[in-house]
Length: 131
Ligand SMILES: [Zn+2]
Image (tube, rainbow, N blue to C red; front, side, top):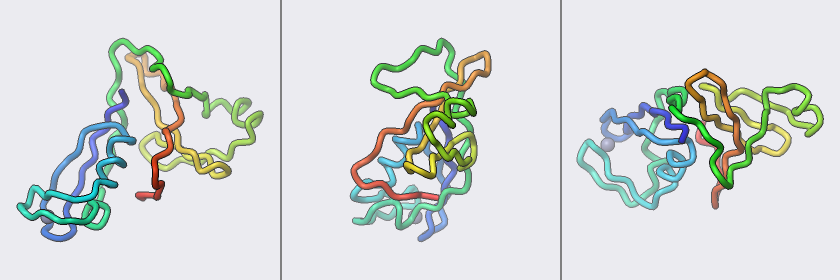
């Protein structure tokens, strides 16, 4: 797991809240059908219409890191790998990257030695840029 802490505010009532989870989970939350705000109102639209992301932390280090089955790990920061794959890697912030050619996003898990293990963020049903 590469849990990050997303600090957000509600654009309707201004209530601050935070979300802890990986980038995929946060996007799944943003794509929910409705939104229950900590400020006390419930909306029948997706949180994307209301949530403003103030900051996104870097992922919390994983104690005993092991590759997760089914994840596509790519050493995107290795220039040779990037060149062979024809990637156009661009930094989105807080260690999150995008390949501008394929629009695939890459997040990482960090082990306790500080090594970053990058993997491809699985595509969601409706992919939108949240930034
Ligand atoms: Zn609110």
